[in-house]
Image (cartoon, rainbow, N blue to C red):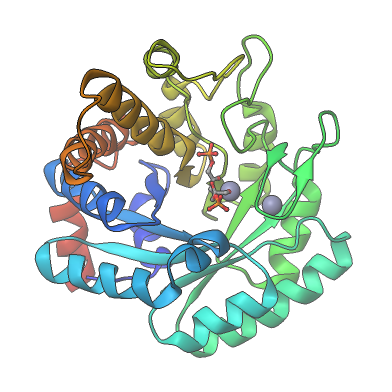
Amino acid sequence: MIVTTAELFKHAYGKYAIGAYNINNAEQTMGLFKGCMASKAPFIIQISKGARKYTDKLMLEGMIRSADTIFPDAIFAVHLDHGDEETCYDCINSGFYSSVMIDASHDPFEKNVEITKRVVEAAHKKGISVEAELGMLGGVEEDVKVEDGAATLTDPAEAEDFVKKTGCDSLACAIGTSHGAFKFKGKQSLHFDVLEKIKARLPGFPLVMHGSSSVPQDEVARINAAGGQIKDSAGVNVNEYLPAAKLGVTKINIDTDGRLVWTRVHREFFRDKPGEFDFRAPGKVYIEEYAKFIASRNELLGSAGQLDDLRASLKK
Ligand SMILES: O=C(CO)COP(=O)(O)O
Ligand SMILES: O=C[C@H](O)COP(=O)(O)O
Ligand SMILES: [Zn+2]
Ligand SMILES: [Zn+2]
């Protein structure tokens, strides 16, 4: 069942975070649904602009509709990840997405407000939730690369002002994470001090953490042992997910880790079976491994086991 992110956040706020996972193909979709069903967790399917171009946006829509039929107990939102204004309107008008992200965080504050406000107006007319972003994460996004040192943490006073001015339903904040597999140099922690200040100014308001992959070092070691060359990678400490959730982070975005699972499975598979050429053989392994990974993340986010209680609360 497709619901809005606002409905998911209402149940999760202050208690646990909903995992937001990107999908691009059928194997990822199957693994995601299987993992969420095994761990009895609600979830958010994220669709990036890149994913919409990879096969076709309608292909993704078809896969998700089919998964919804195959797994009738699933409760999830369909969310556009890092949208520009035009893509937001396309998703809002599609009648399929239940949530969009307008990411104008690279524009000056007033322009970000202006653009976000327009998207909120269009989305709310159709009952669709809007995530906006303030502050700048480091690392690589689809169209932009934020150079080392250029990332800026979200200013709590600006965050309060921004939410009041735009009417957005949730806010992606920069609290020290970045996209991709190379987040930190050395050991670093999230900026819980900033998060606390944002929560104090926006009590009860759902916050979003992008760039939350943990980049498991055992996974990277296996990839490299099977011919990969991923150097100096580092991710978020998984023991910081729940403390962040208690401070109002209701959505935690994890994409890179899933790509690492894919890379490990396929590198090891073809290393060990060099004569194999049926792509379904490694594909099957990947679906099961991705499902296991998703279930393990839902446990860490606290969303595991919440499905029945959420279902009951949605009926009220
Ligand atoms: O924020 C993300 C998607 O919007 C994903 O972040 P990661 O690169 O850490 O997985
Ligand atoms: O934030 C970016 C997400 O990880 C999606 O990545 P993508 O734009 O390469 O699909
Ligand atoms: Zn951004
Ligand atoms: Zn992101």
